[in-house]
Length: 312
Image (cartoon, rainbow, N blue to C red; front, side, top):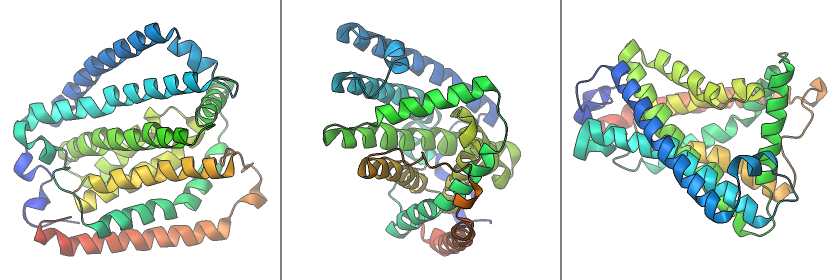
């Protein structure tokens, strides 16, 4: 799909410094390393005053941990996400485009409400498809060390999402849903996908390579395929709308719906034994896939008409 006018070039007004995309990505890694070091220092300082060791607290996290310990871990994760994703992306954008840094990240204006709703509907309607790809992923044999890491990560997330008081739900939505949605979209779509498009001169290749790296980054082997699909859908949303807020809202809806679902059910909603073939909702998966394709087509067509008006 070729977009007309200034929206045909995603750097348009905010092209920034004329630096080759590979050098931009290298600079991004350097800024990330610097910010991660600062974030690590802040976490270490907080650990000192709290009298808790972050690594030990993470490894020993269980349902028996106190509210204070869970909040310490949540706060540490929040600092980690901010220092790894949000601050580096903003820092790079300011370096590249100065006062146009919001344009560089494609967050200079709120999107049309229709695009937000369509993006959220697209992501939520893809759950059965993600469920199916998760089942497919589980059929791939993994070494024992990978399974141990997977089980440990899943257990840690389950224990961290435990809520004893209502405000913990809001804290989880902030730390596990909102900040990761913002930060990961800034890095993987706002910077990585954008520069890969320049590098490959092919937006579709850029979308899938960014989605591949997005999924690989999470280091959850049994969730690789569903996260790849999620990353691709978010990438297409950004490509069609040219407004990063659309995939940010969609990403938040994806994360937040799982947190709220687990809170309401008071159980791990991913604990269903999907290795049993008769539990797979094949019919629903097919309907979901068709609906996802229809929504994708509608979003693409809608934005082809909307883009000339200058507002996505």
